[in-house]
Each structure stands twice: as structure tokens, then as C-alpha cells.
Amino acid sequence: MNERQRQIIAAAIPLFLKEGISVPTSRIAKVAGVSNGTLFNAFATKQDLLDAIYRATKLSMFAAFPPPEDVPFGRHQLRSSWDTYLTWARAAPDDHKVMHLLKDSGLASAEVQAEIEELSAPHAYILMKAWEQGTIRGPSIGFISDVIFAQIDLVISHNLTGADEDLAFDMLCNTLGIDTP
Amino acid sequence: MNERQRQIIAAAIPLFLKEGISVPTSRIAKVAGVSNGTLFNAFATKQDLLDAIYRATKLSMFAAFPPPEDVPFGRHQLRSSWDTYLTWARAAPDDHKVMHLLKDSGLASAEVQAEIEELSAPHAYILMKAWEQGTIRGPSIGFISDVIFAQIDLVISHNLTGADEDLAFDMLCNTLGIDTP
DNA sequence: GGGTAGAGTGACTAGTCAGTCAAGTTGTCT
DNA sequence: AGACAACTTGACTGACTAGTCACTCTACCC
Image (cartoon, rainbow over all chains, first blue to last red; front, top):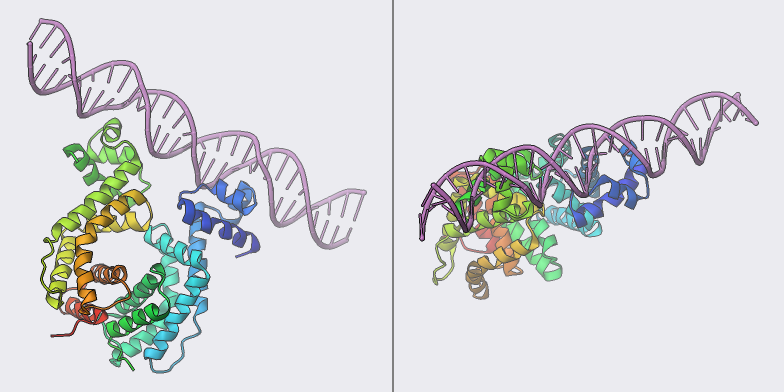
């Protein structure tokens, strides 16, 4: 990922959010301040651009998380992950939105989605251990993980902060069967 | 909504799911067994077709719910709504998927989304009363409602049934602060 | 029979857009 | 200075698509 690519991606993200993924590459190039040809020099196809954006936003999200520590999972660890994700999403709202847009519209290629999925393995492992030890509950790790992210995403889309956010966190703990301290 | 329109919508939904919303109207017309012109006779623009599909799927979902009764909200009522939504989504999986696709991709027009939103008012009212009486908890009715649907959608996408589904329901009850019987 | 209404048809148009390429620019090394 | 590579440019192309319209077909009525 070079400077040109970053520059084009930075221009493309707000455009995708404002005008939809169908915004022409020529418009993206213009807003990025480069020519049409340069855009296709940086990304061979529009699909490559979409995939690069999906990959970049996901990587930026994962990079926000500290490497998982091997301590027993509990309310405190969950709150820490909660805060990390929320902080990232609030600091880079466009990244967060476009990440979901690309995933939900099915326009991020299956290959890139699979490639990125692997990066969540270390975090899934933590959950797995907590699940096996009965610290958290749920029908499967995938479901638990999805429930966690879904609820945090709702906190974001509903603009919850302060006491509301704390209540939402408490609700999540109860969802997972983590006792209130 | 006449027969022609229903016929075109029925052809369009699987195409949108298989090939994306960008599938040409000419292909939709062909699969529906009508001419290009007839499609545009039934729907003035492609956007009108998208909106009609969104409206039709949402209406079909709301129609599955019995009119809300004025009984105290509780675990039983929640389970009933849970079952209704799950049954609908399992009976009409394409409708369920395309409904989310249109919403999440931002391709259902804001007008139609707002129009449909109003239909949820009676159900929101039930939640509102339960919320005011302390039967369920959460930072807002909108958040509570979204959490409920989000968790049921995850049950669907993870194909949970039987004991797994019951566990997921139990988790939802705990999210909302509804006691286990 | 003949006239009318209105839905249906599909070839066509006008426009769009992803992607190309020949020409131009910049930077580096000798 | 000159040779060369690497990058940039934007006009251009070909494929594609939403939407149109002049005409056809069918059903019904007088």
C-alpha cells in the first residue's frame, strides 16, 4: 500500500458513503487530485479498490486492539475490547461505516472477506477458552462474537454515551452471562 | 400492486441475491417472462422497483405479526414475537435476505424506509409501555428494538435451532433484563 | 364488422463508465 | 547534457444499460 493508493482510498471513502458505491472512478480520481489513468495504475480494477478499502479499514480496526493477553476473560477484558472498538469507530467513523457498507452490500469480494476473517482468530481463541470454561455462554463462538459486535455497532449508530453506553455494556454482559460485579 | 408487478418482483428478488442489485433490468424482465417495456410499464424506474421490493418484503413481515394485544409484556410475549419473526424469515428466506440487502446497501430510498418505519409504531408502543413499567430495560426503545431484531437475525444467519435457539432466546431475555421463569 | 382502449413489445437511443494507451513529465544516474 | 526508467495524464474506446416509443395484439363494446 503506497502513498498514491492511500490518497485514492482517502478520497473514495467519503464518496462511497455520500453517493454510493456506484460512484464513477473518474469522480474518485478527480476528488483525489489524480488522473483517471493514475487511479488504474494504483488499482488494476474498481473491484481491487473496493477490496483494498475493505482490507485497509479492517486492518485499521484490528490494529487498534492490543495483542490479546493470556489472562482469564471477564467483565474487565470485555469492557476493554468494547472501549477499543468504540474508540476506533468514533475516531474513524467513515472507515467504520464504509467497512459495514462493503460487507453488507456484498461488494467486498469473498476472497478478501475470508482473508481478513483469519485475523480475528487470536481474539476468537480468547473467547473460545472463556466459553469452554463457562465464563461466557452462547451456542457457538461465532454467534457470541457476532452478538458482541452487533451490540457495540448499535451503541454507535444510536450515538449512546455515558450512562446509556454503560447500560448497554451491562446488557451485553448479561447477554453473555457475565455477572455484574 | 398488481399481478404484473408481483411477477416482476418475484423474478427480481433471487436475481438480486445471486448477482447483486446491479443486475440489468433487461435480465429481470427476461427471467420474469415479460418484455423490457413491460417492466418499465409496471415500474417507472429501477429505483421504483427496488423500493417496491423493500416495501413488499417489509409488509409481508409485518403482516406475519398478529395485531399487538394489550396484555402485560413479558417473556411469553417476547417469545411469541421471536417465533413469528423466525418463522417468517425461514418460510421466506429470500424476502428476508433481500430486505436486509436493500436496507444495508442504502439502495432502498430514504422515503420508503421512513414510510415503512411508521408501521412498527404499534409494536414500539408495546415496548414503550414495558420499558416505562420497568419490565424491560435499555437506553431507548429504538435501541431495544434493534437489539431484539439483531439477535434474531443472528439466529437466522447462524442457522440455530432447537436447544441452540432456546439458549439464544434466553440470552436475549437476559439482555433485556427479563427474568428466567 | 369495425372501432376503441389499453396492455404488451423489442429495437432503439442517449448516455455512462471501467479500463486503455500514446504522449508527456519528472527524476536519476553517468 | 543525454539516456533511460518510472510515473502521470486525459482523451478515447467499447461495452453496457436505463429508459423510450412507434407499433402490435387482444378483449370488449356498439
